[in-house]
Image 1 (cartoon, rainbow, N blue to C red):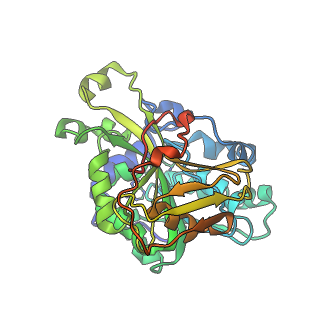
Image 2 (cartoon, rainbow, N blue to C red; image 1 turned 60 degrees about the horizontal axis):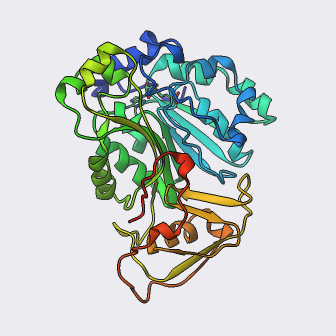
Length: 357
Ligand SMILES: C[S@@+](CC[C@H](N)C(=O)[O-])C[C@H]1O[C@@H](n2cnc3c(N)ncnc32)[C@H](O)[C@@H]1O
């Protein structure tokens, strides 16, 4: 492993979480809720890679979503709280020989498994040298390992809820991303601020519920560090089958949400209309007929769509620029972008929430 996790100040704070993932739960089915246990059907391109991944890695998968976006070839990616490395290995295959994936993780038992299989996984993917590296450390220490503006993408699967200071985490991510890069991640969010009897319960915390942010507070933190206009990709309610836990949780509702946050100059906190139009060329690998940017935006091949200024930036200043013809400028403002609904909703996401307007 690359670095020993710093002893202080984090060890005491994270003892119970490390114990939970290092000792208490041994496999996915040991979890008491479906919060950190994503049973969603995997997209085909990811499903095809799964048989190439060792069972020891998959048996200790505790993710709550599918935070692996399209267009990963040649990307430099960091996965926060990578656990045994399932998502890192999927992305290792998707970024290809010229891309690179880092995973950072604080629980020794978890990252030990990720490390153990590097050579076997590289062999399974047909790579002559590793394009994955695991860093045994806290997410809070990201600035020690990465230069500013050095990464294309940061992912994370059911981790940030476990961290003590979410603003530090999002700020770290913002700093290390290049302009045009994104954070694409799944995590647990609550419909209100979680009361202290829930947040202080070690099992609820370990199960990714106790530390969940109220989604509006998340939006505020994201905006504060520079990630304006967070976009929801998908959302599913978390079911709590365990009676004892239901009694503790009461009326608080939890959701697993996949968000995408962009680091882009000029993003505004709301969707504004400058008269932009976008046309998708159908060339994104694995997405020949339509491309879903987020819950409120699906682009059909060759069909022009009116878009707000923020969406124009997300399509024209990022790795997606080669697949979209975006016309318009920011010279004239036509007011708030009121008609996001002219972009068809993908009801399959089950969300019904538009992240735009
Ligand atoms: C719910 S598990 C998810 C693991 C992995 N992402 C997956 O999908 O299987 C959360 C992981 O985050 C790690 N973690 C939590 N807080 C962390 C921190 N501050 N720094 C590094 N790792 C952390 C835990 O050790 C645990 O392995």
